[in-house]
Length: 320
Ligand SMILES: O=c1[nH]cnc2c1ncn2[C@@H]1O[C@H](CO)[C@@H](O)[C@H]1O
Image (cartoon, rainbow, N blue to C red; front, side):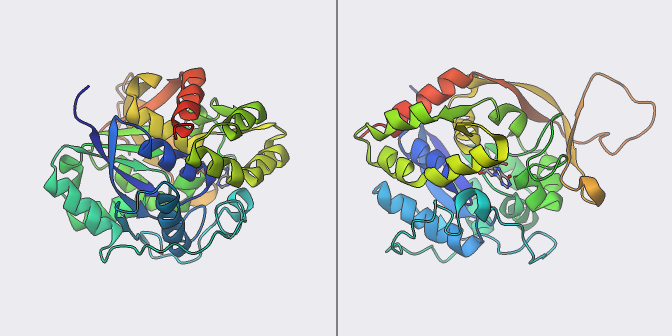
């Protein structure tokens, strides 16, 4: 095996974020060099606290946590927080004790820029929340898209309904202006949308199996997961949960788990379809110039090996 891929996780923990973070920490293919935090499932301050808590549970406190933006790219402070999915504390309403660790004295955007400069072309960012920090990194250093290795985005609803409303997926809806800036920045981007993550489900039986494992992270996931399961029962009538963030993380770890199409993605930033992601494939040569013309292309995941994805997540979380 080659050298481990350097990874920064931009995250708003979140129960499925917790699974994805633990998964990365238990995966030899990647070396997690930092966590950056963002609002989304919780406010940014709580995201930072939860990131530090999860590193403590995994006994990986040496990994730096850089706090991200508290507001959207347009400085909007009224945010939509998904406490009804993850609980008021973001981790299933258990009010875990405050972490001992502290975030580093550097913003998320500045940390992202520093690492991209320190290891040009070598750093993968897995973005599990709204894309504000990544957009701020691009504004801070316009060369960031060229210097970052890859950005794997958990976000978007490509040719399917959203989960905030029929148009928009939660992470893109959280900051559509940032998302449009990131999708068109020219970096090597792989977007994993809910059209793909809705195929990857952890069942109650999977959870029970996980709870029998000796893994400390697995046990912690099981402790947190109840509320996430009851939300899916209520919202979708299902006895299982969508593995959004772990699927994006596994696509970064093992790209062969997904197939993708390549084209230009633009994000709707106004009106009733704010947050809509529209992918233009390259098949038609439009006679007119459109908002997609001459923009850099990105990769958008189309299919996923769901069975293998769930299996890998379970195996890795179960490691002691
Ligand atoms: O209904 C919802 N509203 C807001 N956020 C949600 C909802 N369902 C899931 N997520 C969260 O948003 C990301 C995927 O879109 C995931 O991080 C998931 O935990």
